[in-house]
Length: 314
Ligand code: NAD
Image (cartoon, rainbow, N blue to C red; front, side, top):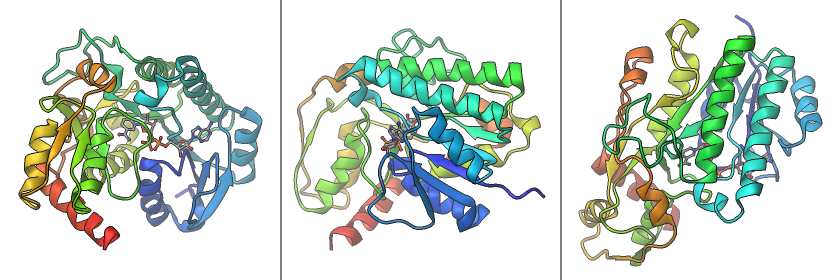
């Protein structure tokens, strides 16, 4: 079997921080190159500073390490992107196009470029949103994700690039803080709860959104990337579901551990973004193609988050 060398771009982020150890375990610590704009506070393994908007810098790393697979995680997320739409568009698109083009030129064997539930907008069905629902996103982030999905399909069809993707729901994790998305409240709430504080929620109490626990998100990523090419029928991006809940339901779930925990609701500009997104996702195509099945529901995720974060704050 050919030895793989994996480049993770945007490795210091919420998903990269948790994905790196899994890739290091599968491929070997010296076969995984983490890259980001700045050095992380603690490093395990190989790290390179990289601005992925610069094609020469990306090419240099791909050549130097003879990279065979790329996980492109760098992006400006939904809420942060709205503060400066053209900056978010330029960064998201430039990095995706650089990664696609450099992958083609340097015979990258497999490429992962995640999408998001933010690719859906006003006219997609809100419940059990199907794989092929219309994509009319309300945010610049969503527009960049739809464009990236279509460019990925184009590179697959035109150049045979093995590019794979998941439309992640809001990812909930204890390893690091999220990077400016509309589902960030579902992580921040646990940090307040385990410290004995109340929580100010930027979404209304009945705002249902699709979410996924990090362990499930990582397993989905690894299962998708390890699946034989013959099992991959979707080259835009696969719908992926974990669980769906409202802030009120999450608060109730936390109250089973901390009965005095209170959430105050102070919706801001992120409420409109959340309302443009699906409430539940139909991921039957991922189930059929490569056997996806989520393992974490709301109560299991709540238990895991509280156990892990209690250990951090002790
Ligand atoms: P994040 O914001 O936590 O991390 C992104 C990382 O990219 C940061 O460490 C940042 O420094 C880095 N970065 C930014 N610009 C860069 C550049 N020019 N060059 C190199 N690195 C750069 O994001 P995340 O939550 O880890 O998300 C990873 C991917 O998953 C993104 O494509 C995101 O859109 C997607 N996604 C995430 C979620 C979620 O809930 N976390 C949900 C849906 C989709």
